[in-house]
Length: 483
Image 1: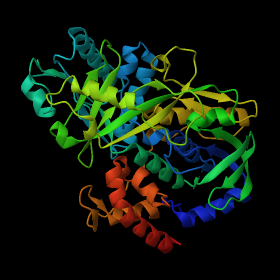
Image 2 (image 1 turned 120 degrees about the horizontal axis):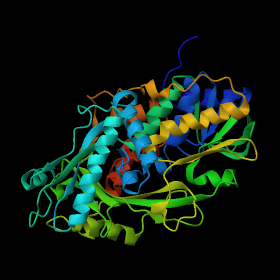
Image 3 (image 1 turned 30 degrees about the vertical axis):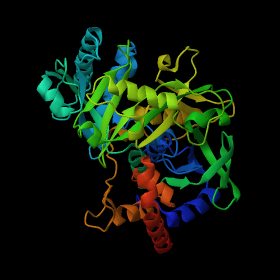
Image 4 (image 1 turned 90 degrees about the vertical axis):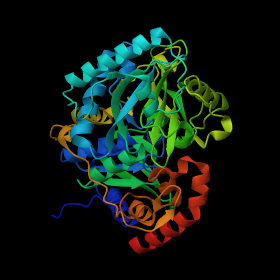
């Protein structure tokens, strides 16, 4: 038998859709975010047959709206959650050394000792970064991957972050963490790696009803309904998990970021780490990105009520982020300099805490009354461990004959896009090859998939609008060619 390709496209979708309706699968995964993709990969790498269905596109929900950090849990140390911090550091180690070193780079994070940062915050931040380095050592991450934290002079600090206000600046503390090339790309890459091990990855397929032995599904593109039979079912739908499992109490927390031109901040090469006023455990980050951008985030606000299809930033959140950033820089960033903004909903497990910032980031894996497994909570960095725990529980309660998890030593597939290609947009550097690759290999079926979840050009509305006609044309031609 030939080894399956990692390519996801409309031709493969048609074949896998037919097989999903005709054959009983060992594991049916609901949800195509990082957790669902991780579950599909974990199960497929254990030798189980896997079908994943996603109502929208890969990384449509929370997974594309993160800070794009693979972090070692400094925040959790600050709140006393040592277990979560240790887990984060270990998973970061695996991602940066074995699983996805091609998708992650070390990023310097600078806590400035400026007038807007109190002595208490400086001491607490520096101590936390030192403790974070102990977690790095405990996880056996080499310094070649993550350099040691150190005190830097005011001159070095302003070289790393030129927009810093030099008046009263006393240097800063520089530490390192992992930064993803892109969070949505990680999801697509995990899904492709699962597909290379035989998993059926089906986007635009909605779960209408869920049972312990399968689901009623609907092809969103045609409206056709069909049954998927499964030996086990895992609900990995994030903030929508409660709509499929009434016993689960989800408490969404909205995290908002704004997008700035890097030039407006002097094109920083390190991230600014800015404590909330009066806090030693909560921070706003200004993080350099591709395409000459910086994202500033993030908030942590209760988001009660119906879960929206796409969360929206609020005016007060945007103003809060600007106010936090402007405390430490020379020239304040104005509201009209914000190029874009985005918000994601964290799928927190409701623990009864007064504030979402106090809710544990540990994940929950539980069996529903209907017999399927729900995995919820956690964070992007620990997706692999969440997936392992979910498949372990499904194997136990449904009697699956599964090998032990292998994902701790499994490298994700590469992304081989030709570097020499026609440039479709000079400002962002978007190329024809990137768009074609998204359609032929990464499962994109619309221009929106390409702009919003494969290339991230869509984070800035003006860039998105400018690129849309050219991308629509390339997508249409490529879809016709793929068949």
